[in-house]
Image (tube, rainbow, N blue to C red; front, side):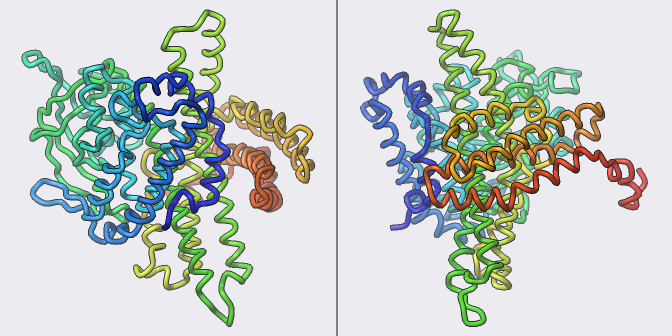
Length: 579
């Protein structure tokens, strides 16, 4: 009986080595929830056992039901007729199966019918759904707007809408993008006006490229403040679909065919304000986008895992020149590099998920107000550090995972040769599906810009120090690498200083990706060496990484320190253009 959880060695490794005891205690109210809900865990061991059962069920559904339907979903796609969207048959079956298995409302509280899961556990489900059918993740993962309602909505809104998400009765959409407002959401123009007579807000305007725009519940970013042109004039609104919103079209896309991407027209549509006015983009969308970016990271990881699995299977079966192609160094080196990339990415994303969990747990402790002054100060300081880490690691995860997925899918087709280019094999679908991940919810370039702020303020120093302290006296075969990394940390500081001392934004942006890559190389090396203490396979991957990948650090360092501005100063001439 196939299972995406129990049969994936690295997922099991990561799950079995999660350190989330404190997080679970906080979200379970020190296990007092067990007094009210007989299915709530009574202690940490019980919680881990519960999570494992849930993940095993999800892994089985993904392998046995969702994955076999994915090709037909891609071929059929979502259809648009008479102003309505209809999901592909396989999408409907998958959603109904997940609903019947009570796998909706993963992180939402039990009071609304949710599973009250930590993000890191729920994200494993999202990753497996993505591996089975990347387009389904866009619908299933948009339950995340329920999380935003839970975080910022009124009690009435939570009581009314969250049980619907938890039961699977509704799907969600976040309506941000407009024809003239893509990455630059400050340019949003969809208008929200307050109807004094009826005591409701009304929305007017167009939203474009809206994932799952046929959803029942929408969170809509709209301009509520007359005469404004920036973020301070934007608010967030909750809209329950009715006749006053028209779906104008669905897009014909390269991939993710099961997920409808729509253009919407709001015509005096009634909506409810979420939270406070003017905080729509500044606070609520930023929170929503962080969750969405982590979701896309998991989507990319799932796609990469699927493509790698198919490539490995093909390489084990296909024979050329009298031997299996897996035996050729060029092939097994490509696949081992892909395996390495997938596993370091999984470590990065799961760690980021834990940071999000820790941030939310600390916020909960502080909001409950049961702390003395000294403890409150301590928790606030800790929250400040952890939330900044989460804000840095989220774009790092989105950047690295999505670029990685595109490369792994490229390699998967290469392993298949000409047959991989044909629709007879799934790798061409994975290749098409992967391409959007580095674009939507913020392009790779924007993720690098978002991450560099944390890097230049030395947010990674605490990370590196933690790795060294935990390894002290147990460096083993990697003792020389630990010494080298200490040197590289100093070089990273020098590179940061070099970029900052020029006091030039163009140069800062130009070198951002280089500095981010330097910081990630150090983090990955430390992480792999730490994991190698628990697994001989991780030890081999760590050795491969430190021998083959880590030396790139010095080339990146040289690029920053030489401060060559040929491209910056001459890009018009190099491109043969005049601006």
